View 1 (cartoon, rainbow, N blue to C red):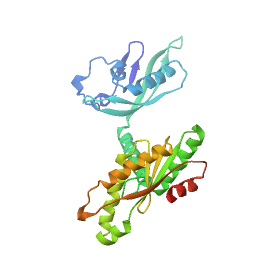
View 2 (view 1 turned 120 degrees about the vertical axis):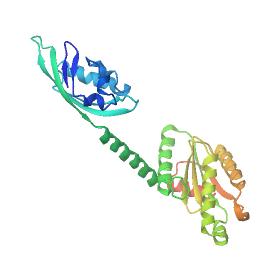
View 3 (view 1 turned 60 degrees about the vertical axis):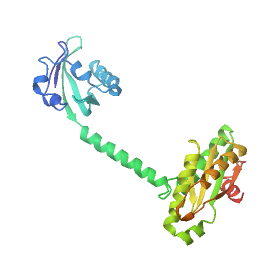
View 4 (view 1 turned 90 degrees about the vertical axis):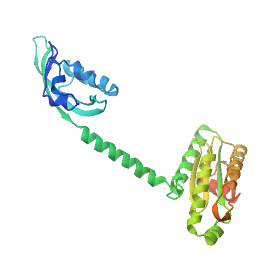
Length: 266
């Protein structure tokens, strides 16, 4: 592209516009700089303008930036734009600029896909495959983080360690597939009965850990009782009746292992 700065007229390869979905006969006879900048993504506009202003003033030796422009059908395409002032007047003010634009949409789409897959992998790394709760490692790390916050901000912190009663008997009598269904349904019920701020994980086997931030032991007992009642209401096939037992404790200067052990012994 070539930009006559004084007349504000841009001459460019038609691909710059046709790639945005416009036909050649939709291109105005005279195209100005604003023809493109008016179509910039709102999140990119100020940054692009600042880059161009810095180059026009001579602050930066080259204008180089990446941005999104809206296509005719309302979508967004990414471009890498590199340009330079090719002529200035006697006062040093820009007269002409020239540059080249690269369509980087495909690269950004690929980066978005990679980012999405990385997020999925990160989630898989901390998620128990059966219950979709946090796995043992992840819930243990969450508890360590909450203990640090409790110490820093001095708010109450409580946990609930709970087991499914007689779970081995369910597996032995009804099979492991039915046992897995019980685990999944109990996990779902705990999750639905808890608050958004609570952290829930499968600690191991049929054992679950619920972290109650900013919650004293009395409040945690009430929350645990709600969970217990909801689990007892679950309807399973084959006449299976599921109950849970658990211990609630409030943090009192223990290390994380001692804290969990206290809850496990209640």
